Amino acid sequence: MQFKVPQDVQRKDTIIWSLTIQQLIICGIGGGIAYALYIQLSKTYFLEVWLPPVVIISAITLAFAFLRIHNLPFDEFLMHFIEYHMLPRQRSWIQGAGKPFIPPFDDTKKKIEKVQPKKDSKKKKSLAELTEVLDTQGGADNTEKAKELTSQEKKDGLKQLINQNYNN
Figure 1 (cartoon, rainbow, N blue to C red):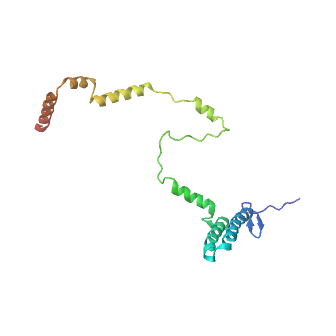
Figure 2: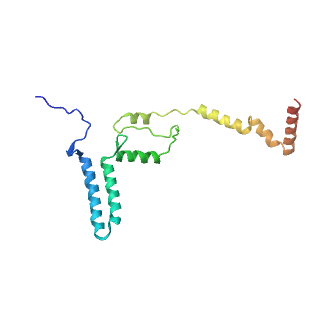
Figure 3: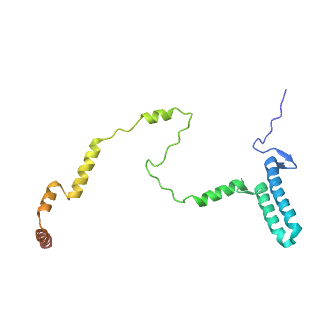
């Protein structure tokens, strides 16, 4: 027995005329709201009062049902537009700031939790030494001498250094 396979499987099924179920629902809800607004406003107000809200609601309904921009449905285009204007334009990378996506059904989460990077005490020690050298301007011996020197001695030493450099 042979079956007929449709050629365009990505196309949505049409229900009435050439409308899909989504378009029918959108038109039904939007049309119902526009009609209810028309019934309420047309009883007491003139055409100039009830026509603009009914036309605006009808236009929004038709846009959501039928309008496609850049081959995207209007609602999807609107969400991308809002997202584009809400998120920052420039992205910066910060190491270790993000959490990697780990699916809940995957066992790699257990492996990642068990594996922890080894801490290098050597690195911390060298970093501490480096900060000490930078803070003391060359070593621990200079700090003791700097504490013993008075301000006049410091000025004299600075003048000698300037004179030596100036004469050379």
